Amino acid sequence: MSLTNYKTQRGPSKSPRFYFTLLLLIAGYHHSFAVIHDSPLARLAVKHILHLEFDKSDALLAEMKRTEPDNNFRLLAENYKDFVRVNVSDDYRKYLAVKDDVSARIGIIEDEKISSPYNRWVLGDLYFQQGILQLKFGEYLSGARAVRKSLDLLSENKRQHPAFIYSYKYLGVMHAAISSIPPEYQWISSLLGISGSLEQGKNELQVMMQGTMETDPFVTEARMLYLFTLMTFDNADNAYEKIDGTIQLMNKQNPLEAFFICSSLLKRHRNGDALMVLNDLNKSSFPYLHMLNGIAWLNKLEHIKASEEFRLFLSVSTGQNYVKAALLKLSWCELIDGDRNSYEHYLSQIPTRGSVNTDEDKVALNESKRNAPPNLYLLKARLLFDGGYLDDAYKLLKSSSDKMTGSAEKIEYDYRLGRILHQKEEITAAIDHYVKTLEKDTESKTWFPASAALQLGLIYEEQRDKAMAMKYYKLCLSLDPPEYKASLHQKAKAGMHRVG
Image (cartoon, rainbow, N blue to C red; front, top):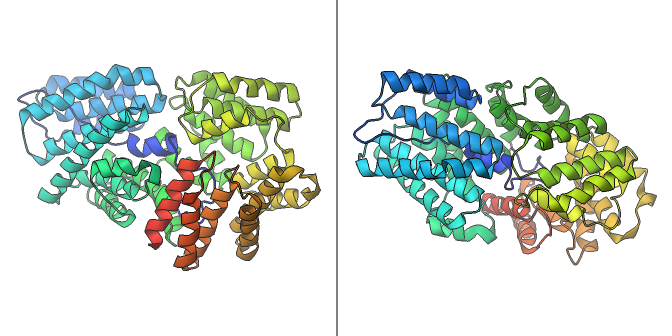
């Protein structure tokens, strides 16, 4: 999506919005002396896996094992099933259960030393999948090496067999993402020894989407990856049009596709549209959808419905990510409801539950250390803004300017007004409030200055003032915000690549 329009402090972090970018990359596995060739049964199994219908895919793969015992395309789908399950559950124990299988599959395929495009594709995807899982669960060095091997294999496949479209999908995501790696993670790109651009990545994904039938399950996957790429990295004037066009081709009843659709809608402040998708969706197979639904209700200040969804998420999720974030949002629901004791009850659980792998969880941990609850006017305005209820948010802030006490609340007040005015396309007034935010928070004790600098960079980029855009992107990167650092720096780095 267009970074100018996605004016939110949240962004790609180690979260489902980032790991599901990579979630749909397929992996393969095959027996010695076997070959890989196409199979309608395997493709139908992959389709069911993409819909999280694992019982149906298991039945198809069992049939394929009986009727096509030497076709390793079956094992591509089997490994993909493991990968999807780990990412959907976000469960480290499930990762440990499949970790050795992935390594074994890589070894078998390497031992066969077959250089066909299918074998190179499968091996490249296996390495990529291994690398993503390793990075997800903190095995950074080995993960980076595995991704490097994947990129080498898929790039070579593209060079030798340019008409073999299945190499393009994964290369597309990586080439788009590599251009926006924040400075603190540049060692990864150096280790990988590669470079890429957003345009290159988008073009490769389009090759995949346009190069085969729409019923191909891997086209479904490519659309999800393309949507992620647009909403995360793209600042082009026609990004909204491309996003909406992609969504129109997607299945809102498929939990995985709905995840990407709703993430895009929420990030674009289209809260009502996201609620329409989420409320009609069976979320039982994908716990994080309860989290998204809770966020959407909370953005509308319907805190009772939001509480129900956050509690559901906490009760069914077996992972450690977003637990602290869900507890924080539950505490906000209680604060909005006027129940200070329940607010403190949920807040007190944050330090001891869940992990701090995501920006959202880090923010929640910091919030739990507050000496006093957040200013209720600022909190409500923030939520209304996130939901796209701009007029309500603006009126609330303008009527409560005398309710701001202390420098921190006054800094946030200017920042929130800037964000609202920016989204309302009152650009001159928005710039004024962003600059005030930078001037007031000279010691960068909050993340507001870094975000204000990023937004100023986006404004000047849209106005084609490359010098001013570069100035504020660099300023953003020079700041060390206590929260959202990875997300803010990633977006600033992406902006510098676009204008540089």
